[in-house]
Length: 468
Image (cartoon, rainbow, N blue to C red; front, side):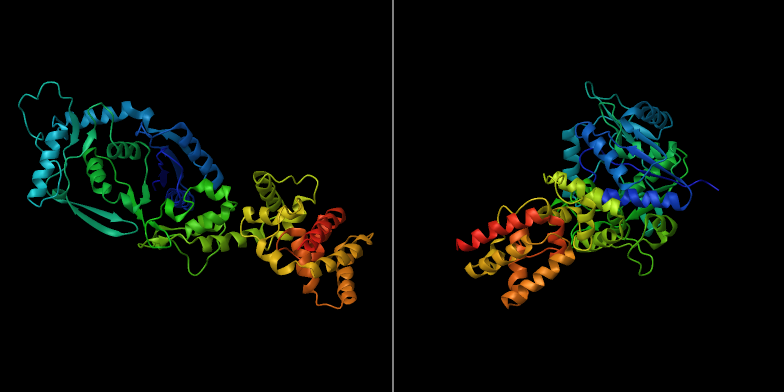
């Protein structure tokens, strides 16, 4: 039985976007599920737009996603001699030819076709000509596409797709400067690398019949083709920058866990019953092309947030602490003199959807508020609230044991002393120490902040209230 071999072939012309990440994941899972091999290939023939920085982004993204490849990365620019060899073979066998049409002639050709309400394309002018070519024109090499019959793609996702050869023109396989084109390079690479399954976005469906004809011309075995549905934004349109973060590493920067993003990506077009949460091991065990949907899949950020929260709630303390540390550093928050990061991470585990959010929630444990939330301060601070906070300050200052239990007992006795509901001191107190009304339980929050920090913040809040 032939060993399954899949490939992921990104172009290094920018960041690695979510659609490409989903394609990489599906190729990886399919190879692993079948005990096969996963190949990384860098399609860098677009020399003007390809950069070393973009290559590094691809490598960093693959590492962060945990998609370890078995071979590669292979670079197409390092295989130009091989592509030229194949082009020469096609020329010698009469399956390709030199075309000397100028850009102006090609434009005129398309205009005439449009006037006749025909498809604007190359009309095969140089396909069978034997006359002397024009002087001073460097030709392109075109593939001699069959003129009769049809290409039938037995797509593993979309089912049979039939394209008449009469609909296809003779595509350029080598430019006049000697550089090969995408459709040729892909076929030669997939042939040489023994790729058995080509799993890619359905924006490539139009390329597939052209590539199949080149495979056939080279006498190569066809891979199985599987075209994945597009990823859509919440407005139902193809996902793009206007939908927010579309780069894989942007999600890492924003504090999402890798496993949560991979889980969300695998559900974009694939399902296994009603199950929503999958470990990577489960994905590798269960994934199959037979359960990939044919319709577009919506990238729902709210769903991703929910998933990430599930993963954060079940993550190890070490994972939480490492993630929080990274994002505290990124936010420029000095956490050396405050409570242990792991302790704060555990306290905030159930309250944060991302590490960025957790870092924001952790900020008050390491920094006194530089300003109070305007709405919260307007509602909770007053001259009267200031006097109550002064009493809280004095009672907490008397504590030798600043444990959550001792703090809770002191707050309860203060409520009784002032003969008010708990909210009359609890809410102003929360604003005083954190700057807003959202935080974990007050007794734990104050204990972790430490007595000295809490008393200093209460002094500042009392002064603020008295100035109103």
